[in-house]
Length: 296
Figure (tube, rainbow, N blue to C red):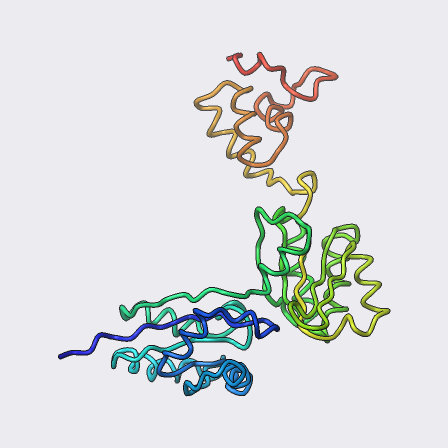
């Protein structure tokens, strides 16, 4: 009788407090034939605390290409393989992508065992908009590259989430204030779920100054949550607006085309209407009147 192939179990582990390991995650770690861990020494502490004796195998950024074939063979032999990172959900700024991708391509079942994540934990307590957000992980360590990356995000309207190393947090906050604006609201979450959990709230300028004064600011695991750009600060691509208006004017009168273009590009209706009419608006009128939508 041919044995059914195994399952790759992608298991989220605590980001600090070991009590956050779910019963389902513990059961998955216990039933796996092997646990592929980012740092076996770190994961061994978790296993000892929870009474799990499953063998460990290292899987990190430097050996993942070599480890994947071995783990795929074990899946093919019917063994379940658990994948964990040092903390939180695997693959999120952690190794494991190649293993998951190749296991899925090979037709093996890949199952998520969800749980802690510093991203969602920080968003939940930040008090900043969470309906839409983007995760940028760790930005480049080199100052010039980091500033360039932040400049590209200066007009991003969604809430921004970053990870940062303790020894770079002061430089990161200074660059954030310089590129995104010192008045932008932000929160630095330090040591989430741990004994010394601390939330620093304020503007980027205030946080950058505080980081320079306080030693503890640069200690432990750090997650940054930054308010997105205000709608008025969002850049409008003039070329995109012109192309959009050219297309819409083939089917719609100027007023309707301007209203549609404003929704599609983020431009004001007045700016779109000015393009439609060659800039010839009547003095004192900043917006086309409602009935202009019916004008030919």
